[in-house]
Length: 130
Image (cartoon, rainbow, N blue to C red; front, side, top):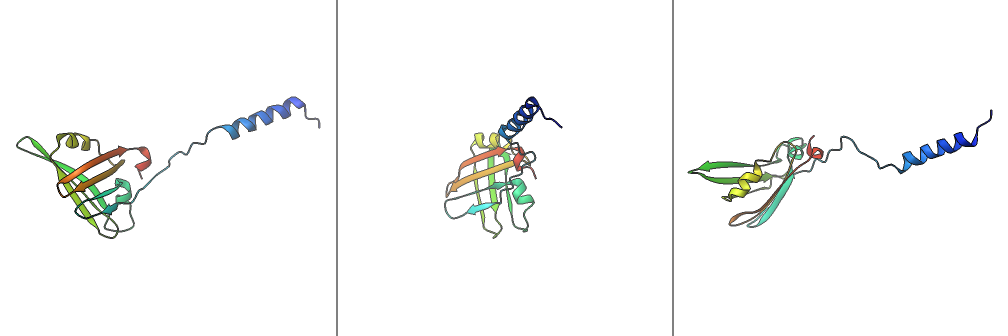
């Protein structure tokens, strides 16, 4: 059996192309547990899927918005695996609009002090869906 130089080169080129191509990870899931640093000022964060599918019965994280006399009030909370709880609220209408983007693929970060929520970040990504 004779192998031509062209066939060897073609196979080599094919292997080199496959090895040099970027690797894609389909279906990657990042299930971040709920983390809470509580006190008169603190922060908490986590993914909704991390809380929902945690192995303990304590983890939860979320926010809700209510409207009374036309003004929004936003309340956010988190409870970690050790049952450490933190929460805060704000009347900032921009925060209320931001929280409308929360869904089951959400990451939530909240910082607070004794006056209420000082920073809220929301991220949605397919990697947060469990």
